[in-house]
Length: 285
Picture 1: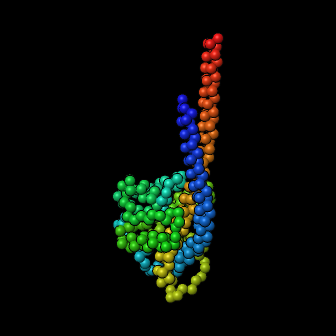
Picture 2: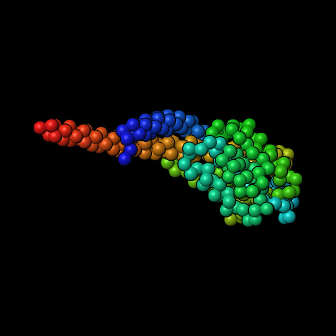
Picture 3: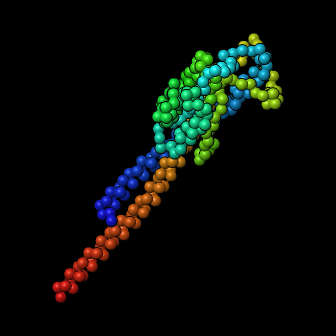
């Protein structure tokens, strides 16, 4: 049976852990509000850019050519993955990594561009090739970082080494829910004929639709990447908030059990001492 000193040390350790998880919970909660506002504010803009670009593509003509529309049949697959830089966020990063693993057709035929130390470590230890990593931006994504990532993906695709670029990120649903999402980034694919019926807005193009589309495609890719970074940042912080809240609750439950155990051991010790005193007194009679 553990001594009273051992139990006191255990209670002190759990109390210290509770203080840390409680502080991290409050920090994540505070940051989540700003991340949620940024992701929510960006969503209408990202949706509108997507609508405009697909509407322009509808009017650009079948003979329009652009490096981001070209197909490289013999190339490899490139996966752009967004994870976290730090742990203590529940299953946030592991779920994103699992979603990325489902995109791997052949281990030697897929390369990665990864945001976050967790994703980099996950795939490097499994022997996958990470050709570019972005560290230190997962919680605080900026438009400059998104532009750098988009330019990197564009340059890699233009080399002709990759037949497609897929993206995996985590969509923020609510403060208690987020889900990994994946989708194709490149080559840019116009909407199918049955989906183009919703694009009824008429635009005036200067000088023409093809030229405007050529300018808008990189901007569209930047917008998609930035929106994914914002969604993932909000998801990471919500996952960390929930994980630290659960850890704090578990620490409180464990402290209650340890205090109860401490009192039982202490009471047993007192009872034993009283019994020994009474027994000694009886022996002296």
